[in-house]
Length: 72
Image (cartoon, rainbow, N blue to C red):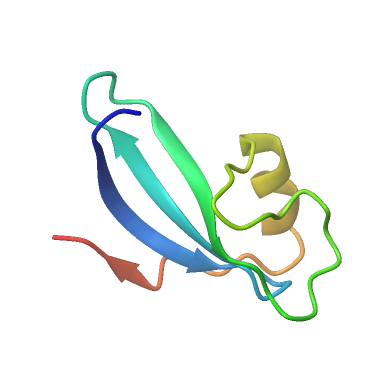
């Protein structure tokens, strides 16, 4: 487990809330599912699990909204 910094969070079109984080030691960005949407049918969206960049890009084409909040 490494130290991470919150960059912001986003609500996907399926209702899932995902958080974007940057690992401090490596500066790698990771995206975690914070909460699963009640009507989400995706088996890949599991609470406290990462989402691959390719899956997030697919979600963007079906209603991915902009960052709703930024951490300072």
